[in-house]
Length: 239
Image (tube, rainbow, N blue to C red; front, side, top):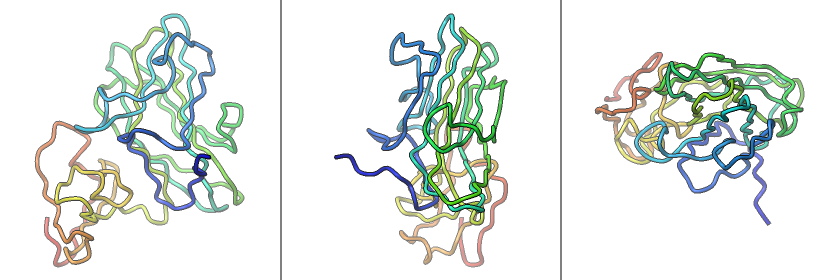
C-alpha cells in the first residue's frame, strides 16, 4: 500500500530531482496520447541547475496543449494565505508557450475553479524565470494546485521546476547549510530550493546553521541562481 501523499507541513517543495514524485498527477485533457512526451512528464535536459530534472510537456503538431500537472493533496488552513513559488521556461521566442496556475478541491481540470492565480500567455524565453502566486482558501480542507499548459498547436515545450508551497506569513528564505557551503545546492536552503530573483533571503550566523557552514557564492551557468530580491546578512554572519 502506498503511503498517504497528503502534505500537511509547510514549506513543501518538489525539485523533481528524485526517481519518483509521490502524489503528483497529470491530466491529458485534450487526449493527445501519441507517446509519453505529449503530456507532463520528467526530463533532464531543460532543468533548473546542473543536476536532476524538471517537469516538462511537449507540443502536439495539430492539437492545442491542454495538459495539467497537479500537486499532491495539500492540507490547508482556512483564512491562511499560501504562496506557490516555481520556476518555468519554454524554448524561446520562436515557439511561445502558455502557462497558468489554478487551485481546487481535487486533482482534476474540472475542479480547478479558483484562479488563475498566475497566467503567462507568452512564455517566450529559454532561461528559467521565477514566479510567485498566492491564494487563500476560505475553509480548512484538502486542496490541489494545478499547472496548466495551454499553448497553441505545434509549439515546442514547457518546463516547470523547483515548486514550493508555503505559508506567506514566513516568506523569507533562510540559509541553513544542511548539505555544504554552496549557495547553488537546494538542500542548503529553507524550503529546499535555491532562492531566485523574487525572494527575500536571510543569512544567519554560522552557529545557527545546521552544518555551521557559511554560504559561498561561486559561479553557475544557471541564470536563475544568485540574484535575489533582498538579502539580509545578520550581525555576525558571513557570506
